[in-house]
Length: 216
Ligand code: SF4
Ligand code: SF4
Image 1: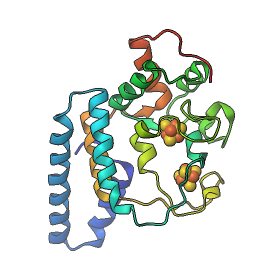
Image 2 (image 1 turned 120 degrees about the horizontal axis):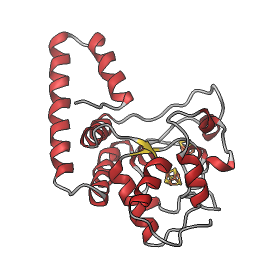
Image 3 (image 1 turned 90 degrees about the vertical axis):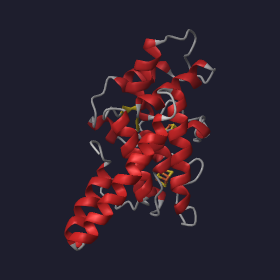
Image 4 (image 1 turned 60 degrees about the vertical axis):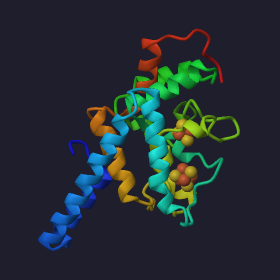
């Protein structure tokens, strides 16, 4: 595994000191096997939008384990839709397909966000209008919910929504180990390419321009 998610990297590092050596080796072997099977499953779909869809289907299955938890995430709760949401190139192809199918986005905002380097402090200004995801609707709900990126699907928290947008507040995400292994497999297949929606979507739209997508 060349590109584990930050959570998975931290989890393995913690288990390395917490578990007896043999138990830790068994755990690593199980993660490795799962990672390999996820890579194989993702590779059975062609690169691009279809692989992005396959990732989302598999991720929803992996996250089903968290279904019984009481989380704070609700329709219209959109603090996290103003952050630097990162996607894979396959997901960018999927989002670009939705734009070409007629989902109207604010191209000016997309281009502005795309100029930002990764982890730009600009993303730290909570609820700044220019930080709104281009897919966030006026009713504060996602306009492409069925096709939302993996980063949006996996972000489930048990702390109050206000904590997500309060500097220094503790946020308690719900980590799902198998989901993190799946995302690590997707990142490996992408060669570690993972960047904001704006950066990868604008690149994808530039590669295959579509006339008439502006406004919102
Ligand atoms: S992650 Fe935070 S801001 Fe986003 S939907 Fe959940 S509670 Fe709301
Ligand atoms: S794709 Fe949807 S859920 Fe994800 S950040 Fe944008 S508006 Fe929010």
